[in-house]
Image 1 (cartoon, chains in turn blue, yellow):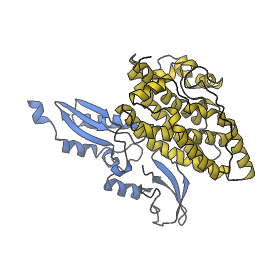
Image 2 (tube, rainbow over the protein chains, first blue to last red):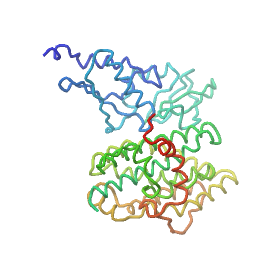
Image 3 (tube, rainbow over the protein chains, first blue to last red):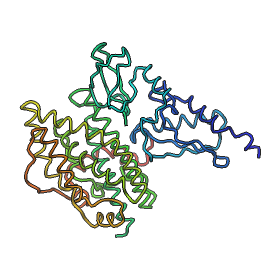
Image 4 (spheres, chains in turn green, purple):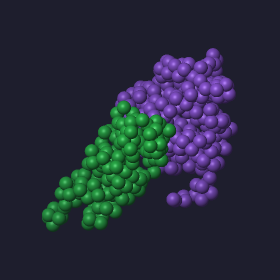
Length: 157
Length: 253
């Protein structure tokens, strides 16, 4: 009975998770990234459902560890992490807040057109692709033809 | 052969293709002609190895002998691998690596599209996840094949040589056997032969744009996906890939 009264609400837990940064792009949170699919109490166990961004993304195990650490620090003892691969992660799940923060950080957010809308540094629309792949599995490498700065583009999948 | 045995074989074929090709591609890490290509190849390899974890993880589960994806990857010897021979042939030059990637990606994307409708929801889920990554691989390898094929005199010659060398390894991807028949019956996977028409249409279009000529011969080297006979190259690859677990059994990161 005491457990029921001390159980934090799932809304509260979502807030806590929203404070956990993505290990490779620390300006956005795991919630911004859209990889936390569900938070639910199953009796006294907190079940957090996580979906991987890319199947080989090396950050996946670090992310699991960061979630565990963050929630244990808040006093959650009984925790289960569930991996869910379907429906597959899509960049449509990035939050608006996350998209804005990415751009401020210098990473162009994903666009359905398949390329960045504008240079995240100077705002020019004269941009060109350098490589379809970038510094992490989720990014591609672009360059601005006006300010000449290279930048990362968050791939749209 | 029971359904579980056939299913395990099918999953090993999927996972060994991505594992062995992923390892091959990773051999370019630090050696590609330019930094961007190096990163692109390493990222492709990473995706393939990530997909391997899902396929071999499920293979271990269906097999029911308590084996993990790592056990299957690192503790089997050459004759137990079920990848097509195309995945294990050496990288050759950059052009041949990209041609091999294109010939595989084209098959892989069609196969995953079909597997998304698998009667087994675990297979459908892995296929859904992997197909997004593979669409990207195909876009890149096709673009590069066209860029190099329809490029300079030297790059065109090298790409034609790559195609001529790799072509006899294409046919194996469409060979069917008892395992496939069982998978078709269970609605788990398509008959490999049924993918050929779509594959030929796709590669003819891209290789045409690349100004390359597809060899006429339909001769196919085979023996990889059944495990009957791998090339001599697989054993050499495994000595690298499995070295740590062989030298220090059970070592953990």
